[in-house]
Length: 178
Image 1: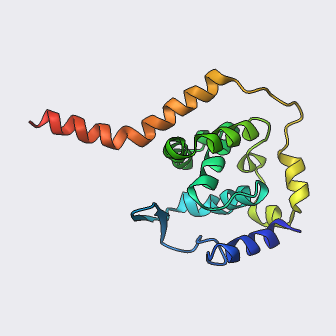
Image 2: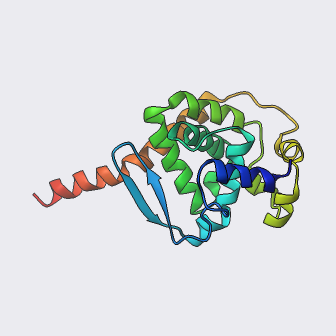
């Protein structure tokens, strides 16, 4: 099955538009008690298909549990270097650590032994024509690495800063203006 065919089924199964929402002006982040409607920036539109392909490769759903795995995987593969989309991954990892730490850890462990799809530097048209098995071979690193706990904990700390920064900023500003 090609990546394109897999994406088609993934979008249909998750009630997403045929392009995964790439053409939409906004996207939604759903939480238990509320939903945030955020602008769908061009940099997100350019890579959303890659994020969705990761869900397919690792058979992750689109709940926060699935996103937790993908966030850990993205950070381990170095997506954090890709400004500004890396901020989304860091934030998602930090948020997910609170609710699904095991999934973040599993994703991170899987990610240290793969290359990020974005780092393959394959144009979208070519990427979509690949079979899933071809893509899995392409992202697998030749030399397997062991988990470095210090590095993992560092990224956990940094991701929590991304999640907590708005709250810390609010608290500091409240005390500053008192």
